[in-house]
Length: 248
Image (cartoon, rainbow, N blue to C red; front, side, top):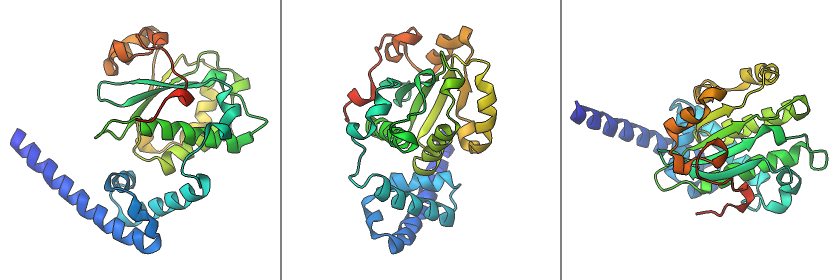
């Protein structure tokens, strides 16, 4: 049985590779700069569109155009997201048992940014996602997020911001989210959740886990070793602000 599984995996890999080659050829005719992207990137877009070459190519071209416009310098600098960083709401440290880097986001510390507005928040989302991706070890493509809603109230509610972040994740960082743990969920949050839920694609929905308070540590320990779990959840790692993490 193991031998058959290996053969099947090899066939799947060969099948995907052929489709990647087709997508690359199609995309390069529209945007020669796509040559700079590796096969792994194209493969993620392909998988996000269930191996449909035309849909994956359109999605990838949209991404390339967005990236040039949104990050003309290649990256988002700390100076471009100062108002968001001041809320002290996103941290990154450690990795789960599969080697996926972990981010912790405190939803109760997020408030609509009046100075920078929605555009700065979107820059902050990309800033954070780029940081996460830069911390991935070789051979890993996904990250894990712990969304902590401790202290969340209607003053934190930001439907436009939530939908913008969701769009960025699904449209421009496909197949990057490994799992999202939502913890310390207040009852009032579910009203907002019902408004956001219809915009979440089916693949992303399967990666979202609501964790009960009584089972918080045990649930996280199923995926994360204690020496890689943040102290706030009973582990051994201290929280490190996202902007203080260095690329590997």
